[in-house]
Amino acid sequence: MGAGAAALVVADRVGLALHLRGMTIREVAAEIGCAPGSVARWAKMAREGGDDALDPIPGCGSKSRLSDDGRERLRAILLLGAVAAGFETEMWSLRRVREVIASELDILY
Image (tube, rainbow, N blue to C red; front, top):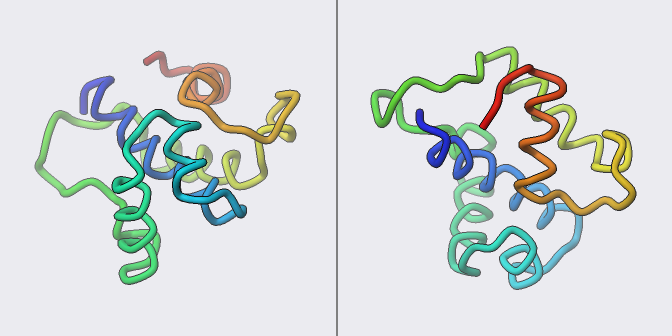
């Protein structure tokens, strides 16, 4: 998967995590820079299909640079919150997620 596709995969997880922590759909959309409809779709997919519903469809796009273990580590870091990852606020942004991926998983996007 290319950097753009990887950012989208991360965006849906971050967006869903923010929404589950209490942010409204519109707040999440403004925070991560996407349409409110995308956040609503991610929430519905997760509600109806669980965490796996947000996984990329196998065979689509290029190969992910994150291993299965790396994805699990990233998920655990995201769920602990941005402050636990060393940031001043709990708001996750794509920039912050890229920083965490670079520092914790040694992968640059």
